[in-house]
Length: 224
Image (cartoon, helix red, strand yellow):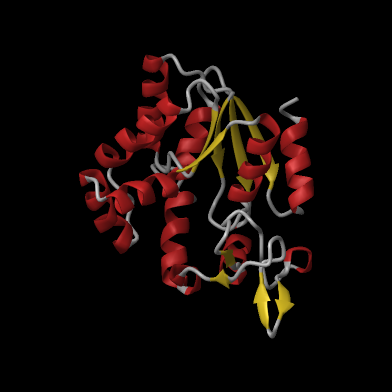
């Protein structure tokens, strides 16, 4: 089973991806992790990608696509859920072409729909677990609030330390990321709409404003 997961920053896409990955025992491939692997390894592609990431810009397709396809090929037998790519219409078209040429079938496209302002508020209140970024912690939502231990907030799932991404507190950076996602002409929403109009994958669109459990139940009920 091969799946694409879409959702704006702050939608809980990573959390839902982890739930789907666990149920179907497929690889959860997050585009940011692919970049970090190359950057940490000091590869030529990683060095080039870092320059763009540091500026908050999209990494060009001629750098991103080879990284992604290499990782998908390694998960071909097990199946994969790809999270965070494609982010543009051009990337969607290139990925669709590459999958067809390689004989990898795309089974599902999951879209988590969320109002832009709600997504922004969620980003600014989220806290990241140093042990697992998919452990949901948010200072504004009672159901996933961090817990207090020895006078400080720690991860509600594993008790690990929490931190924030600097750009999560930077409204300009958040707006820049959301400008890319919500762009229906060439951005990520254009990519989502592209896959809604191609033959093959089943598109599952769910309301991301609901609880984690409600969202996951809605996704999984449409995959059975």
